Length: 321
Image (cartoon, rainbow, N blue to C red; front, side):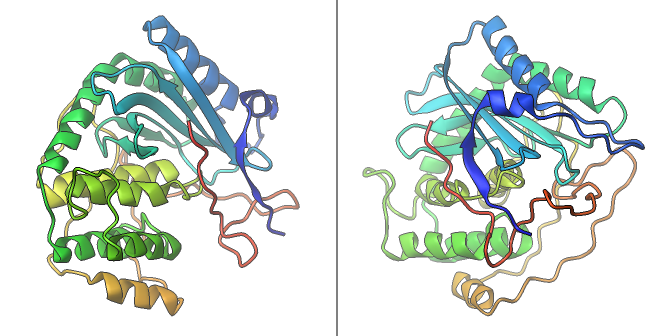
């Protein structure tokens, strides 16, 4: 039986949820330890917390936390730390430093550089805490990289072909967008929507924020990873920027980029037919963690939350910070 997801919740509720006991090699990472470590480390670094946002499934088995800090040299970009966690084996723990774009109420994370993802095995609970600390210690470096990325994107005006290829590949190849999100993005591009009055609608920073606006509807299970995939595509594919080697690289595979190009209209047409793009089965080598690979799911029970059904497609708008 499908259950609705909560658009937002409280940290007190997340802390109150008991840890699962799946047995075997599974090591749960508690929402409470993540929340407490994040807040205490931010305060220890002398950063001012401006707002907190927590959201989860109704059961709290899948959760996101976002902490907005009143910090940053760019007045429109405020530093955030985001994390994702699950108790039902449906999602790896993830965390990363990013920015909140104040004028458009969108988010930006530094692709495969400033994020971390970890399976719930071994010493995952302690490693998650250590990684949160590491992210916060390197927060200023990650923030500066994102400010630089914004400025580089503002200097580029994309062609319609580049925009079409970007949306198509993010939808079909990267699976970072849903068909509903693609439809909304297409409508905004078709009407030449400007998220920034001083920029052309085809400006790369404008297009980036249009996509980021619809990523706010992503389910907490995939939201953070989708944000990272979009950023990585814009910087590494559209701008051909190499991934900066800052602190420690994330444990994720960077897929090879095919040379064929996709048309946005064709992508939408295929989506409306209800056809799912064919994908190759994921493979994993020792010590390598593919970005999209999920952990082995538990057997559904009465309180198991399912997504993508006709009655509950797992979408909701992320509340403003």
